[in-house]
Image (cartoon, rainbow, N blue to C red; front, side):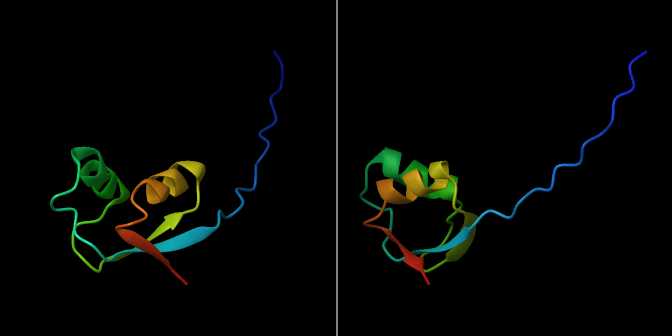
Length: 71
C-alpha cells in the first residue's frame, strides 16, 4: 500500500467587495431581475459583501446601472 500524506493547503482569503443596490429592478428585463436575485439582493439600499470572483464581478457589471460598489 502506498502511504498518502495529506497536504494542507492554506486557503488564501479572497478580496471582498461591498455592493449596494440603489435602483429598483422593477420595469427591468427578466435577466437583470434574476441577476439581482442571484447576487442576493432582497431590498432596495441593501448592502452585501461578496468575494471578488470573476463570476460576481461579471454579474455586477451586468447590472452596473442598478448597483454601486461601496468603499
